[in-house]
Length: 465
Image (cartoon, rainbow, N blue to C red; front, top):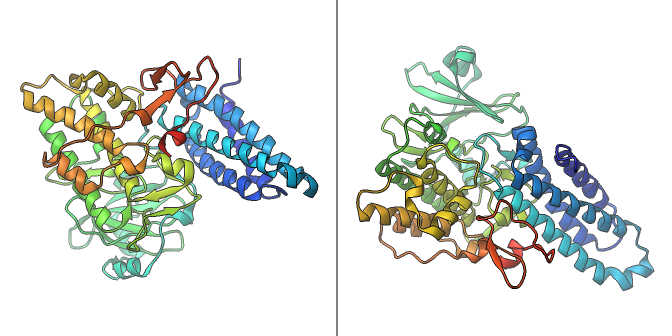
């Protein structure tokens, strides 16, 4: 039996070896560098997963199987990249084309296996991938002008507001930041974010919308920037979802989703891609109005006409990350739509009580296929509510299409939520694992999207291109 516990560590070792080998290849350099970029994203996901879950990560059979396959693929990738280090100029002329095909296939295999790891279990609210402190934000003139509308606090002001950052004032202590409750001299209650890493950047942006947490100012300091935001007295959405005794009723759920959708639509108009849209980044004000937070590490796509940006870096929460981001490092406005869709399905799946260790997309596909809308809450008393629930499942699946081109825009989502737009049927084939030519089996039905008897692997990338 394989050493399952050691597999994640071995994957990181192989990833590091591939990254180092790709720097010194003598043949098919561009192909090898593409693999290196893919492995960079893999390293971010795996490092975060190990930090957040430890050995619990491999307790899930689906994750364990995915990691085992991923290790084998990485060994093959390392062999190919190492071969490219040794190729001579003479051999290069005859073998470069064939080697390029092999490198492309192994790159796709890595990306697809990484997608499987991403969707193999329910996203954990605490686990966020921030692979590079330099990816936080592109500082442009538009951002600089927004800073002029933010107040600059002194460290002494914030120390006084938090009783010298007392433990009693901590309202949230996450992987990357600690949030303190503070009271300013004028009596205003605020939330003060402090990064754990003194090199990390928390960059406040002046955004004004009823469904987005307002940044009030910041404090530049040699130990890292502190950000001051409006205080949210009613906690986080994650607390509400996880609270078994106080589940959201259906009207409250719709109201919450509507508010989040309006906030995401506003971010779209401001050309902001949220890095980590998840329940623990949704807050409630005194009127239970949902507000989107966690924007301190946003990537801004400010230039009009820029459809997407490609990056080697990775950030977000494992399970929420869009597939095109994992496979090709692409972020766009459709990244927000995907993350909203996962969050949407997470909210309505949470209505049924304790959430199982299942990805929201997998849950929604099973419900949609069987049309069992009672699976996420008490049976609706009237037909209209049942139809609303079916619409919500459909909207969530549309937002989480594997191909970004198949996802609606956020204005379309708002129209769908308001019943103003007819819903197209979600394309389910992009979620389907293809085995033999005679049989197709949806991955959400199986305990693992496994290889079939013919030994072929299905490819999400090939299905969406």
